[in-house]
Amino acid sequence: MKASLLLIGLLSAGVALAQPAPKKEGIEGKGYQWNAQEGEKIEALHLKGDKKRGEEAYEVCGACHLPSGAGRPDGTFPQLAGQHTTVLIKQMADIRAGLRDNPTMYPFAVTLTDPQELADVSVYIQSLCIPTDHGKYEGPDAAMQVAKGKELYEKECKECHGVHGEGDKEKFYPVIAGQHYKYLLRQMTEIRDGKRRNANPDMVKIIKKYDDSQLVAISAFQSSLAMPGAMCKPKAGKK
Image (cartoon, rainbow, N blue to C red; front, top):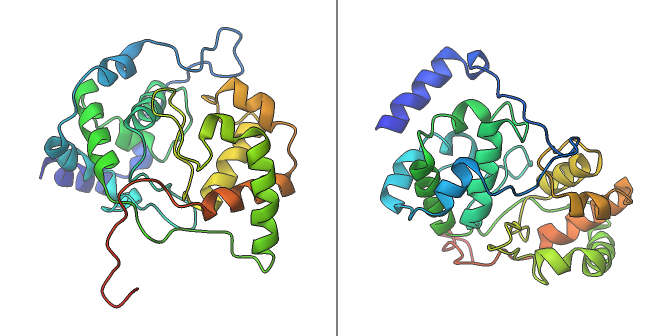
């Protein structure tokens, strides 16, 4: 109920009226540390999340990411269901601290009151079943793009993100398998172009040499993979 009333208040007032996020120096700064062990992120990581409380806190997130955590196939909002808690906590903390620029999400992210609520909502999101449908590359050359992307992915991406795109919870590497194609493409492009200010410098070094067509192929392959975790039951009438 609290989150529902808060969402109504935010929407009626207009999230654009919320204070902008503070600007913290990111990859452009000499002293930038991708995963600095400090702040509310570290506090949240050491707390045990409560799924029931997290479900209530997630209500405000569901307006964009959907109650299921499926996000939007057009890539506007990523699929969150099944993502590692470490990744969720880091990204929310970075947005709240002004290290990752996301003016759409910031007004909602700051409604989480403290590190405990970060831990709660993250454990709830991770527990959600994986949607059976998501946005994939749909061009007539899909098979070729996926094959090309597989070759590129296995060359330099799988060392960190895993053979199956499962990521690494302990190292804060996200699950990318089964993420929406358009979201993956946008994020990789922004990382390459220096616009994702909280990006891992090691990834920036790898990805900056790829051109647009190569990023399309890698995204097509990643979105073709099945996200690891408990899949949602098919809807009635679907096999």
